[in-house]
Length: 331
Image (cartoon, rainbow, N blue to C red; front, side):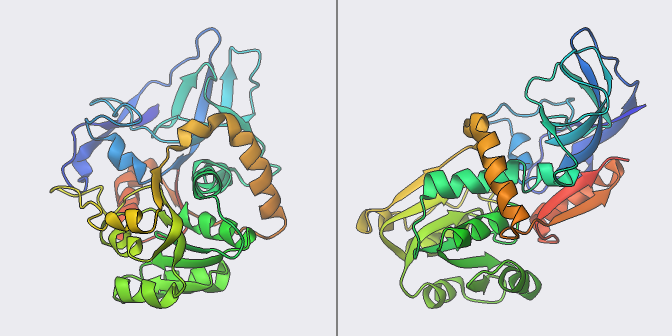
């Protein structure tokens, strides 16, 4: 049977377990031109929280009664498509379920001989590409600049900091708790770290970014974004990747009240959506893969087994109980 996680209601605040329903249905058979994927790994991302809201966004919301949208790695177990072979592995939008059919559009072949399969929805997948294009195309780092990264121990932030180091920048990471901060400094090579749970964020940014901030890569929004804006250097770039601190808010989103700092410093604040870079994913994969092979980038995945554990695992995105990329293994 095909186990499927269906969206049953629009959550308010942090999603409760009854936001979804786990159901079983017959395994679908591939039609002419289609293939049947057995889903092996599901990517858990903060953006999934936004996809459940019935609001205008860069992608339509998940419909009530639909399979919860998610990036996945799947194995082809049946094929009526001459271009896709049984036994091959692909990355695509398979959703939180055990099996799915597709004509292959939007799915990309991956090679487990080059890297472990979970890496292709982590460092060699959407999070890694988000870090790559967000920093290099939007942030445009130059050697010697100071890069401040929030959510620095997460799937995207951890790669942003490492790429910034490769490009010769001084990197300061913001994370929650001593363990994560130690991970950033000792394992990933960050120059300085800020523990937002145990330090005054304004004072800490001032002391670690004495010469100001040239690039702020923002994954959290809210108070930390506000504090970073006050330390911008002239012509600084603020890269808006996400705002995880605001996703479960039941009141108005806390906006950047210090936005006039952009005027004073002649800086820019720019958002981006990784789906705009799909045609360049191959380029990113080659370069990131090279950095991994050379030991310049370390990839970390946390894998939890069982579709039945989706809700508890999903909450880890927001309670801080993770480092690197969070992945659900479908058994």
